[in-house]
Structure formats: C-alpha cells, structure tokens
Length: 130
Image (tube, rainbow, N blue to C red):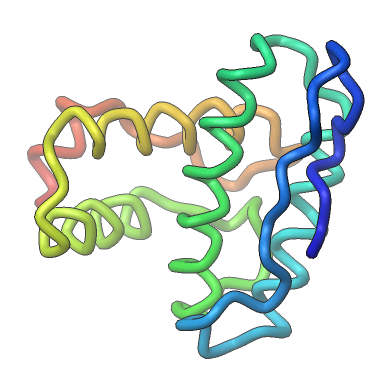
C-alpha cells in the first residue's frame, strides 16, 4: 500500500491507496501517472487536509480511467478524456453532484500540472460536447 505524499501534515494519518488496483488493465501506465500525480501533490498546500484527501481520491479514480485509456502523461489530459469520464460515471449511476465533485478535483489538480497541453473547459462548455 502506498501512502499519500503529504503524510503527517496537520498531524493527520496518511491515506492508504492500493498499489496496482484491480480493474486497471495497464498497471505500468497507472504507476507512471500516479508517480507524476504524487510529485504534484507534494507541493500542494492550498486546501484543507480533508479537501486534499477527498480530491486525491477522486483524482486517483480518474487516473485509473486514464491508465485504461493508455494515457501516458497528465499533461496530455484533454476535454475528450473528461467527457468520456463523465459518461462512465453516469453509466455507473452516480449523481450529478458526485460527478461535479470529481470534475472539481480533476480541475484543481490539472491546474497544477506543469506544461499542461490543454486548458480544461468548464461544466457548461462540456455539456455542449457530450
């Protein structure tokens, strides 16, 4: 089990995230994406611990999705990936508010990706691409 990179911050227990989660077809891509994500997380101090925890968990789920799509770098996340992920979450029967939380988490972390190739659209713009 891997620990979240900000362990000990605010004297909270670290969050445990499974290594090589089930359902991820491309474990190598998953590990690469998670390593990149952990590098970004190390320097983030913009949110409360509970917000970071919740957003981390949402982003980890999105990274599972990206690994199955064979995306190699976080900087290559595009609106198309977001739209496909939204459809996947809707197919799972998740509520609109849960999906919006996931999108917020993705945007917060994506904004911190150095040299991101694409600017992610907001929710109203994404609705037009579905």
